[in-house]
Length: 433
Image (cartoon, rainbow, N blue to C red; front, side, top):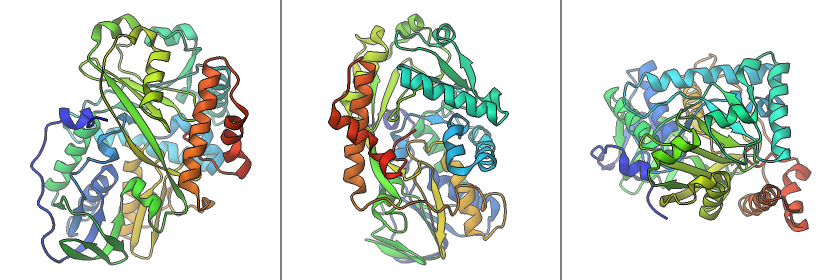
């Protein structure tokens, strides 16, 4: 495994000093990724008088916010899933709230490699084609058909050519970013607004009113937990969040091969698997292929399978890590007294962390507004079983094996089929789709 290339490429800032001794604050935010930084920035912009302290165990963005695929979008591409969980009206409410994500990133006025080219969701099997048809039907039912534009195989090939693509849907509401550049832009913006930042300061204990670290104790009226997958092992979210893994591979620059593929528009692309492949290009002509719930082998297999023309492209970087998956595949935002939290972004946190941050800020400020009533806030969902992390790994492995068999035109093993069916049989929605 290599370090994420994003962290190598992004211009670096000087590290903030660690906490030195005890400290009082109005708000203590644990976690220096997208969610924590957006929350700190939002709080200072809404209430400049607040003393906001953000602590990060390493450097800001060195967790999932620095190693993801850089897909920046909300929920229009997931409308069918939202509808099942929230109902028609609330699904549309959440999707429309997500329309604020791209303007918020634009307003940072820094070079984060923002490329607003939309997203293609493609089908590579008959099962995936059926899933795409269902997504279009949902958009038609909710009278937002413009949010899910059907593309024929020929139209998909005009944007990106692959012998595996059977057709697709174009979603206008998506951009790509350089994840580490976005994190560092948020960090600089938060500091400029007066947020106090301490790095290399892990939280040994965080609960209502107090955060204990090896170098001092922070006492705060409000504590915000924004630590992503770590909340799969920590109250108050441990029974509702499971830890899965996502892995990516990155090629050397291959701009000539991208020209041959016709993939020059910068579209983000994902397939219709349950544990999807997600792929995009970079400013210097590299290809990133990610495998949700997979390993390096799965990610590289996806690259070679979907793009045989890239067979000779050398893999220069590969990395992975945990992601936080909720029981119904939507983020959980809530409070226990003056302890607030957000988790369960399910591999799609680059954009929705902005939404969660607006809600967290309103919870801290006791605001009775659209954000404190966002459909993500205070949801009651079924708790996961005690063996959720081991079970999640076994289920994800089974689903990956079933989907690989379908892609290769062979019948999956009975054991894999049983494992893949467990979420449906137990009433869980574990997975990424």
